[in-house]
Length: 618
Image (cartoon, rainbow, N blue to C red; front, side):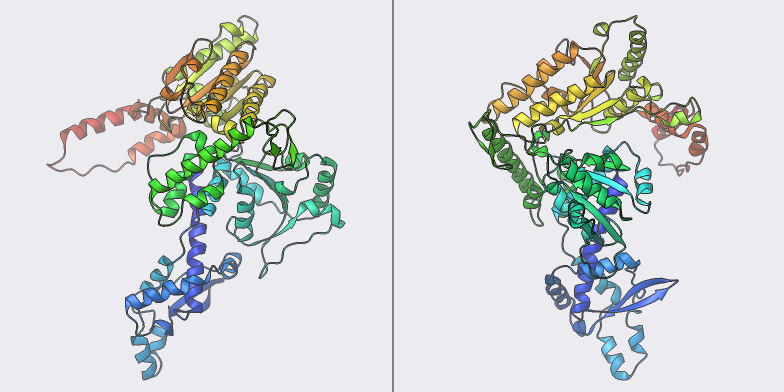
């Protein structure tokens, strides 16, 4: 996840909540607002209002809390964003908040003397802002995740948005994402300004008429949106007419859906940027807890359970005042309920499909999306183009990796074997093309797969067990697993990277879902055995918990080669920095401030300093 983007989006949520609290305080007479212009910018400045005159701090606090019960004032806060009005307190220093009042009569001075300090009052008002909603926080984090999951760098995504009328799609593979994202977009929390939207699915039917929603003020953004829930499956011609009608306008076009196949193919093909995020994972859950509850726990729930959760589940479990332990327990219970329901639907005979109102002739529930094929859910990444120039040093390759130890040796040996295989001098069956990578989070398992993709110059099909299980229903999960392997075989030679492979679990466990997990493991074994009989597919599984994997997965012929990636030591860190800084490394090391000298300095630290410097200078 792009941490800077995630922090910025969460800051926008907090900023809006504080702006609403200030608007409530102005309406209640707690603050008096004045608009000023400074260097072409409109600034909101505040002084204490008559409602707080002569009141104690406790009385003011109760009054502020009471004033915050009127709900958000999104119109005013949005106007601030649209016109660039800065939420600045020009009279925030002590004693200056009542300066204007002190110039008047004696009565005015007496009134001013009974007013609280502006800076403290404004801080109290901002602290009274409503807590962030888990639904909003998780949606924003998914948006930031989509940038990381995209093969397009964040700078290129931002550059694409600067075009006068860009075309873009975002698919959030979490139930509830579509509605939540469009709500945030309309409230001006995703883009800097409120958005007036026009439903693109109705454009062609209305004679190419564009009917934008009415919003207060003069919004900066008018966007034609295509929503996955409105897409009529099977009517591609109608969808193309709608896209063509929207294309006649000069407005940006945005497609939002919760499934890869719920938007017109023509729209995805024409889009400059196609972003995908989800399913839910513990990283997003923990960050949501931190933002809403103010604390987080290292404990969590299983990856497979987390991926079954919806945004509504997070809204139910992660609420202000709830303990982290209680929230995790409730999330786990909700996930188990969803998985149990999926198993019941799968094993039930003649079950009615609630999404389409039809029965499945095979006795199993149809795809969750209402279609027969849920898709692979995999992300395809093509290798970077190597130019043979100095620019190549910025492209990650196994030749330049540092700190990977045996994993790097395996990759370099594989590169030589692939060249021999391409020349017809080596059979695929005699090569080591299946690998299990394990190590703590953040040691670069995904980066290793991307570097191997660039070194071998073959495509990378990236997926995860959470992606496979995201549909929830057993039949859909099995189809996704098969589709991922089939996609890799169709693109051969290729790399199939399976993240969080420990999420498959182990067979033989007791419980009401044992049949579900046994079936998943057995199907994974069949697929691994099947890919062993075909040429051109390299399979890499990644895990943080190798002990949680079924032993049959790591037997001979499957992921039998197991390499552990440790955390980088000083030498490895030096190599990583040297790779990125090149000639600048010496000057960076030289610019490091010297440690303060003193008699109490530990002599061992001097040895450590010398060792570190030698590592960087080697």
